[in-house]
Structure formats: C-alpha cells, structure tokens
Image 1 (tube, rainbow, N blue to C red):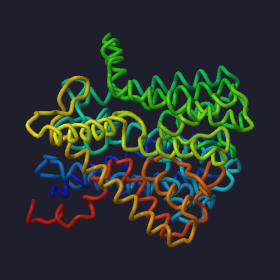
Image 2: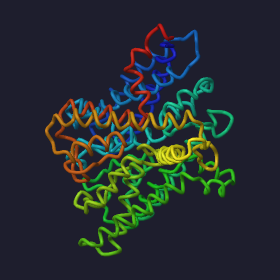
Image 3: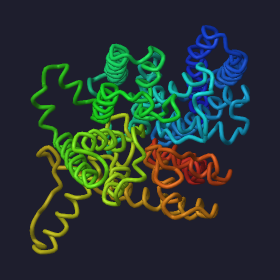
Image 4: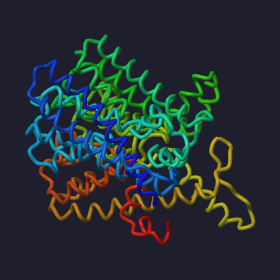
Length: 482
C-alpha cells in the first residue's frame, strides 16, 4: 500500500473542501449570521490537516486499484467528519454524531435527515447542507482530477472507485478532459434549472439550493414540507423533469454534444429507465384514482414521486406513506433499482438490473439446452463475463449488508417497515423511507449505534460497496500483499 500517495491525495481533497467552505462563509457575511466563526474554524482545521498531509512526499507516485479505493473511501469519511463541524460548532446540531450523519447524508446525496425543524437554520448552513449534495453528486475526486495538475497518471483507479456503475471509461482519450466534460455538463444543467425555477417565481436562494439538491439527486429541502411547501405545479414539474435528467447516464449527454444524439437515444439502459418510470407512474396513478385524488392530481403526485424515488433524490410533494399498498410497494422496488449508471443517482442501477435479468434468462435457456452458447448483451454488444459475475456479486453483497444492517438497527425496537425502509433508503441513497422515516418523518430518534450503521450504509451505497469494505479488510493493508 502506497501510504504516502494516499495521504497526499487526501490532503488535496481536504484543501479543496476548505476552499469550497468559502462559499457558505460568504453567505454568512451577506445575511449577517453568527455562523462565520464556525466556518472559519472548520476552514482552518481543514487547511492545517490538508497541508500536513500534502507535505508527505511520495517516492513512488503510482496509484493502483487498492490505493484508489483507499483514497476514495478515506477521503469521503474525512470530508464528512470535517464537513460536520460547522453544524456542530454553531450549536444548531449539538450532537457530533447527528452532525456527522447529516453531512454524510449530504455528501452521499442521500437526503435522510435528523433535523425536526429545518426552516429555523441560518441560510449559510442551509446553503452548505444543500451544497454538499452538489459536491457529492458528481464526486469531489472527479472534480480534483478535472482541476488539479498532474493527476492524469493512475487516476483511473480513483475515478473507477467513485463513479457509480458497473464499468467506468473515458469519454475522451485524456481522463482529465473527461472529468472536465462531466463537470461542464453538470454545471450547465444545474444553471439551467436555477434559471427556470427563478423565472417561475421561486426566490433566488431557494432556486439555487433546490437545484443543488436536484442536481446531486440528494433531496435536502429548505422547507419543512419539502417541495410541497411551495404549492407550485410549475416548480414541481421543473424539479421532477430535472430529477429524471440527472438520473440519466452523463455519457449520453456527451454523445448529444458531439452530434450523436440518435445513437444516444438508442441506449438500452435509457429505454429501460424510461419504461420503468412510465409503467410505475401509470400503476401508481391508477391506484390513487381509487382514493380521494382526481385523475389530474393522481398523475401529478405519481409522476413527481416516481421521478424522486427512482432518481434517488427524495423530494416529496405529498405524504406517500398514506398511499395504497401497491403504490408503496412500487416505490420500495424503485428504491432498490435507482437511476442509470454514470448518473448522480444511487441504488443498484438500471444497468445492473438489466444484466441480472438477462443473466437469469440466459441461465434458464442454458438449463433447457446445455449445449447452447449464450452471452448477455447490452446495446447489442456482449457483456464480458467478469462484468456479469461482478454484477451478481455486487447484488448479493448489497443485499447481505442491507440484511445485516436491518438486524442491527432493529435493536432500537422500531416497527419492521420503519426499520427496513430506513436501511434501504440509506443504502440506496434515497432519503425518506416509510413509516416513521417517511416523507413527514426523520431519523432523529434512532440510537447512536443505528446512526453510525446508517452512515456506513450511505457511504457504502454511494461508493458502490467495495471502497468501504476494503478499508476494513486486513488483507488490503497487509505488507505481505503489497
């Protein structure tokens, strides 16, 4: 293990986080809030720690897979630990475990919260809270690759560990250029949403932080009633459409930019994604029509909530915990699926679902005809067997961690729906679950142990399991295997 390079890269990340904290600090000055000292102390702590780490020079500058995983996992943990300090120092979240949970939820774009009253927070803290979504959505290490010099060599291992999906590749020949393209698309889409929301009558501050949360598919709202508090059909539709947009593989947007739009629209994953959304919206809307909602309201609520859950954003415009059982089952199913690979969304990913389904069908056909030669295909191209195998391993590991976490969280003695959906919501980076952690609930009353487990789940889900599991493996750190 190349410890010097690990510390050096973590140091760079902490310095970047210190620079990013300047933005909420400016907000504290603009709004005349007493949170400036909290941000200043956090920036100082980050700067000192980051500089100490960067000073450690490495003779061997190579980064291999295990170093890449370690850099990503440890960076996200330390980012969250330091990122929690403004909440803790200001006294608005007096428990550091709660502040850590809230910050992990922000960076991992989960959106689960321990806050019972949101609107009373200073605007600078509300900005930082939503800004963590935007930072974590595309990934801060991808940002570092995009802007830092001399990050090209060996950086693929870092990017592979942070970008969601079964496989990660370059958009262009240079990895740094690929990272810049991704962030360029991300920034433009965020800016477009801000303009559209502001043009529709939403206050500028609200437009900015809501767009941050949408772009990162996070779901931290600044109103106690989430998006429902605006009571605006226009805002709901803009946010719903952009939640779906940010749930699409960003590689497809690049293809559109280079005038390969027809090929992008032929993406099999995109067709599955649209199909799942359309089918879910129709079924849920039909189930709502049989309740107190008319046809228009049923489709309005259904479309927004399906977009929110499958993109793993977690905004809400109604209390879907009171919906018919079939509607809640579909939403729970969407929690597991998540968005597309290469998007800012969480969950297992649509592409993995496709591989799992096609792999199962292939095995059935081979059982019927053992001599047949069958391959799993996506977009008419064969998927390598190692990818098929790793997808199955990922799914099994995901479900195993989910089951183990449910058993630990169950120690709190809550009902099965609350306990299980709390874990699923954190593992899939969704935000709200059902029961006490539904859209009108929160995670405040969980025990310290449960909050730590759920924080691990959020990090594991966002980083696709392996980085978080690897740092706890003696095998990875043993000099015997270096």
